[in-house]
Length: 429
Image 1 (cartoon, one colour):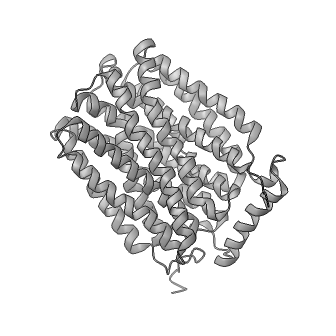
Image 2 (cartoon, helix red, strand yellow; image 1 turned 90 degrees about the vertical axis):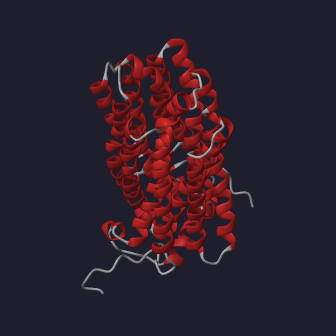
Image 3 (cartoon, rainbow, N blue to C red; image 1 turned 180 degrees about the horizontal axis):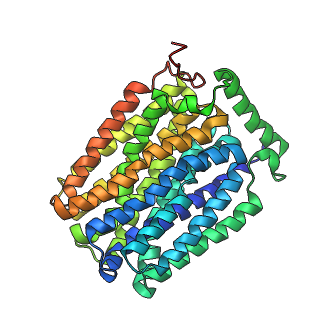
């Protein structure tokens, strides 16, 4: 029986939102080689500017996820997209270190709700069996956005100046916002374009998953302190750490470390992020395939995060020992692909650990912890470049953090961690 496929329209909008989000975010890194000279900003100060974004971003990752649970992802996404697009455009007015630091922090507040709200939308709109595939597809938009930021922002900045580039990409967000209001809703039941059969199929799949897991009346806070939740956060922290370093510093690494021109960097930087898109989407398809075949559903999700995170650490470690430009770019591309796959695995694992009514809040909390890596990573890389002998020491730290994330998920996400049982307090133990 044909059920309809309108949910894929929503998935496409989420994909495009991710692309715009990361194109806006990556823009500063792309123009950094020009901007540093024009505004006289040192590498260490540039690292602090990159990191300032994650102060507001981390906080509003949790706030946005909680609001998506309470008020619906459609409204939260609308406010977030409108807010960050406005601040992105205002970045064109920056005149120095202080103003750029302020705008970058404000920009983080706007983009913070993105991932948790996307994850909440997937919970509302897709059957359980499609979870990893849809997370992989929608989140792959983020790496596509990072990929196209190189040629779009870089070549626009080269031809018209870096300020114009920020205005152009800000306008794209406002176009998406209009489409979101026209075609998107909180749930399939709220959308007249969704057929009754498709709505019933989605609701039945999610309802069956809830019945199999058992109902929980536990409050949100009881799920935030569980070892399994914190282990997912540690894994996502590890994956995000080097992704955020690459978003911020890859253009400068390619121009300063590999001595590529701005034009060549704009093209070469597409390769790793396209591989990141393959990592997100491809790993989602593979993860759902194993999910359907394995009896232990939590183990299926857990391994889809652990294996690629371990492989990313190996790739990052090898970057510092490679000599030729071609090999280095290949290793960076592999690292981004595996890191993206690990992120998909972490987000999908949340669905097996947390009841649907708390997916946004817990996802936002996990994202908050994970995004502390964005505060630390770019700043540490900036200091490594300026004071510790170059990029290689920064890559070594990234590989070590990947290992810690692997160990946390391996030992603390266990089959005994029922996805509906709250952590025991001292009176229950």
